[in-house]
Image 1 (cartoon, rainbow, N blue to C red):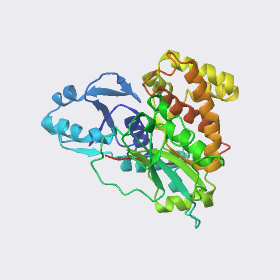
Image 2: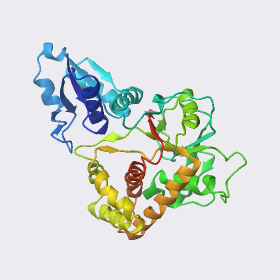
Image 3: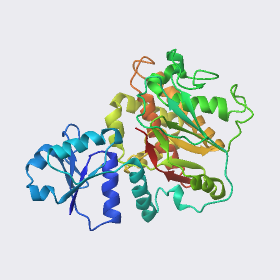
Image 4: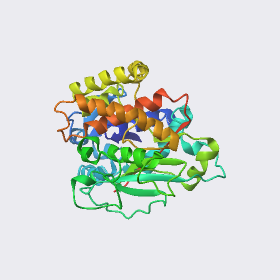
Length: 364
């Protein structure tokens, strides 16, 4: 049975690479999209085709003999299923975030790159964790009911910008940049964690704020860590857990071309050369590889996360000072730059730090 992948972005490309690696006998016929739009004409040499023209060119027998793997964000999968069935294509499977994570874990273990946390032996010491989950007052309610681990705590981002409250911890308390949330997005929460939990001088530290690992996730996306995974952290001297990286074609520069203007990108490069010339030099090489850490999601040892924040925020602050118009934008551009800089920082330090990876569960 032939296989078609519905989707033509990072999720779909990663799935294609994993299938080629793990199941080379499976033939991927094409990538399917609802509309061509900004999608590429091909991915990995495989054509990207609009579903309408593809389905109309198939006989009933052909439709019954092609499996469609839906590799898109989960919140649009139901609509895609309706589209497929409207064209008489009933053999389809949702590649949920959990299934995607499992597939990518096997893929990366085989390649011994971007090693999964789950590949490490289970230890006997359970470290103290504190993961903050960024929430905004305009976030759409989740349809499902999810039980979060006790080490996950909501934090309201952009709290200074509204009167509504959706969490007990606010990014406008203590030392903060809450008013910059429209540009920094979830990074206002990371800044708050840095200044008020990781710093010994933090005004909002409590007697319980002496965890080994701290981190940040989103209200819709969270690192998928089992109880065994938490037992793998300390005894394997894990420094940081990041989501499996997303693939971009031809390279990760496609990310900034999609989300940042050329002017903003040039400012980032200029500031990087000024503040971190060694990183800037390495960036030229890192930009030419395919893999990119999305979402600004991370769990790391306290000291590692503090070092990263101390490196990251001075760069972002100078970028902001040089942006046009300065401080008057509402397009999350600093948040997107944060993803790029996270990718640079941890890929640059991959031989110095023990970095492992986990799936990123999408909540709907």
